[in-house]
Length: 177
Image 1: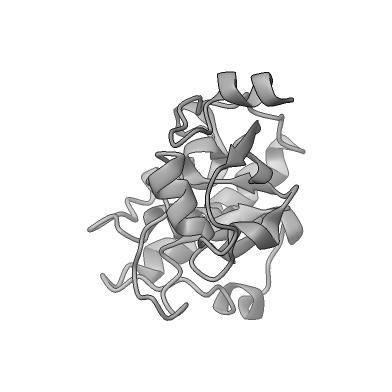
Image 2 (image 1 turned 90 degrees about the vertical axis):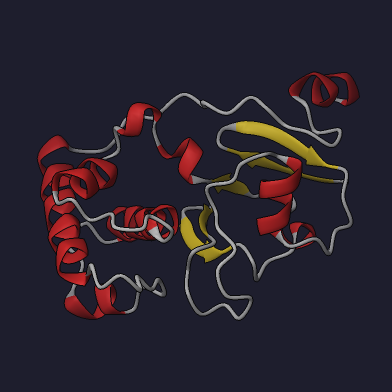
């Protein structure tokens, strides 16, 4: 059994510790924002935030993440209120939408670590948008960075996910604590 915090809630996954985080989130926690994209760690569609760093959830097992703090797109903010989500909509970045969750999370983690990211930091993002929205993505990054600088440190959002399956329900977690 592997324990971690997902979107602000304590979770115990009753899965093999070798299960990739991507599949634990999608199949056991019913959090489908992280996408399966390439199976080679090359696209970033599966990006989530672990301990305030953007990571590829296909490349980490839940056993490696005992005690970690995981944020998915479902837990980034309520009502899509995070500055990156707001900038994403304002710049009309989405085309097919497949890369959106991973890209938004990677940018959110980048801006938290580096409020004024350099061109090199932005270029180092591992996420790929195959629709060619890079100019709009860049404008969204600039807009979100400006909004975050103007508003100061973000307030903590309440967790919005409360549905877990495969024995990881909040009620079962409380009963075993």
